[in-house]
Image (cartoon, rainbow, N blue to C red):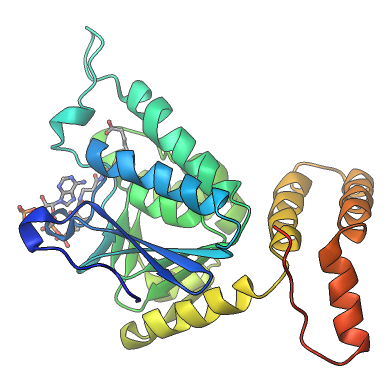
Length: 273
Ligand code: T3D
C-alpha cells in the first residue's frame, strides 16, 4: 500500500508500519497463520496504534493483513498466550490483557481508522476489523464469528458491535453458527461499509484515508463518539449531547476554518486533532 521498509522474510516482524502522507498503515504480518494474533504481535500493535494517536501529523490509520488473510483471530497455538490459572486456560486474562485495550484503543483513536480486509477475518480478527470506523473488504474476503466453534463467546467488542451493526437476529445467527459471511453479504446487511473488487482494495482504501485525513479530525472523532453514545439515550438526551459537543467544536479552529473556506469558495485546511 505504501513505503513499507522491506526486511528479509526470516526476520519479518509480525507488524509492519508504513507512512504515506498523513496516513499510517499497519499491516498484520504473519501470513502463514493468516495473521492470527500472537503475544509478539500484540506487543507491537497496541504501541503502534498509540504512536499514531500521539503523532499529531497522523490524520488517518489503515489496518490490513499480509498475504491471503486479514486476521484469523487469536493464534490458538501461541504458547505465550496460554495463560493458565490452575483451573485451565485463563482466556479471561488474555482478553483483559490484549483484546480489551486493543478494542478500546481503536474505538477512541483521535483520527478515523479503516480496516482494509483483504481476506478472511475470523474470531477476534473479525471483531478487530468491526471496531474500526470503516471496514472496506475485498470481494474474496469473509467474516467468521469463529468463537462458538471453540466454546467461547464473541470478544474484542463483538457482543456490543454485532447487534448494533446488524440487529439481534443476525448477531445471534452469526455468533451462534460461526458460519462464514462473504464480504458482499456483509455489505448487504450493513456489517461493513463497502465491498470492492480485490484489485481495487488498496486504491479505494487509500483514497478514503486521504480524503478523511484532509477533514477535521476532531469533528470526525467526536462524530464517532456522539453516535456511539447516542445509542442507549432517549431522543431528548441525544439532542442535548449534540448541543454540548457542537458547543465545543464551534469554539475550535476547525469550525472557523471550515466556514471561512466555504465563504471564500476555497478548500479548507484543517489542523486540529
Ligand atoms: O486465549 C484466547 O484464545 C482468547 C482469545 C480469543 C479470541 C479469538 O479470536 S478466538 C477465535 C480464534 N480463531 C479461530 O478459531 C479461527 C481458526 N481458523 C479457522 O477456522 C480457519 O483457519 C479459517 C476459517 C480462518 C481459514 O480457513 P482456511 O481453510 O482458509 O485456512 P487454514 O488452512 O485453516 O489456515 C491456514 C493456516 O493458518 C493453517 O496453518 P498450516 O496448516 O498451513 O500450517 C492454520 O492452522 C493457520 N491458522 C489459521 N487460523 C489460525 C491458525 N493458526 C493458529 N491460530 C489460528 N487462529
